[in-house]
Length: 132
Image (tube, rainbow, N blue to C red; front, side, top):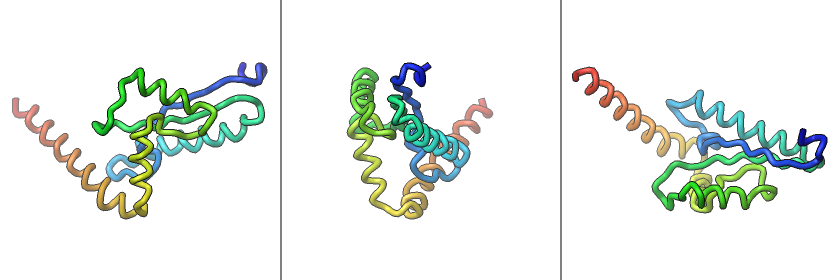
């Protein structure tokens, strides 16, 4: 329908995990990376047809947490300006800071320890539920 009207906006929601390898969550981050590249490819394909396609990869974090209303307002203000955005300034800042490190360094020294700890906590919670 957008193609015939020569205008429209498609917003795909993704995850910050689309931007780098995530050990112990390879399938999840891989599918998010697909979504990101899919959105960017479609954005390039339909740009001249007046259709805006944007992927928002948000961050779940306690650092400058946005209310849903605030996040949506900020994310919508980026429509047409970027094909891929975090949707909120503090999230973009975090992604930029993470990007200062080589991927393998960030993966091995930040992501992997965090994911191992989350796995350990999940296993402990599962064990405690089994004991009850």
